[in-house]
Image (tube, rainbow, N blue to C red; front, side, top):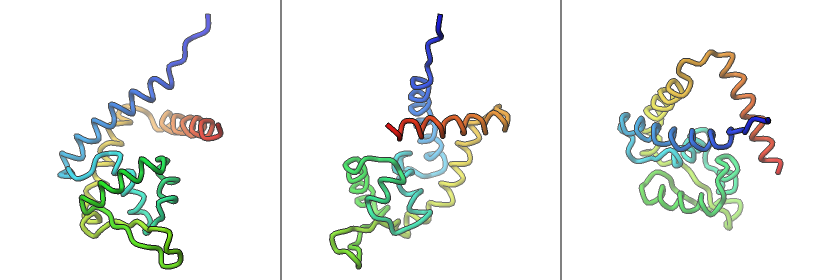
Amino acid sequence: MKAIREGGSLVSKIHQVSGRAFARILKDHGIDELNPSQGRIVFELWKEDPLSQTELAARTRLDKSTLALMLDRLEEQGQIERTRDPSDSRKRLIRATEGNRALHAEYERASREMTRLFYKGIPEAEIDAFEATLGKILANLEGE
């Protein structure tokens, strides 16, 4: 009898549980302003900004309508600002505010804590294999 594969279900459960754990870790680090999903957006802006909404959607893998709603909320909170692209007035550029950039170092510490929790007790070789396998699964799904 063939084993029933539970990878998709496990990934979904890990996503839910890790989201709650990371939200708690962020709160412990005094970052109440961002939830883990918003963190994905500002993390990309910390690496490079300004970015267009299209670029940000591609980097975060969020659909444009979901991203637009999240950007509205981040803008209301003073975390990001949107400006017109000087080379194309139809485009809007998104950048992190100075207030948001002040959270970067503490967010990095919280992220390292989450990574330690995530991989607790797992040898480096297994982590490498796990991440390589996840990369292949992601490529399979993106190819559909």
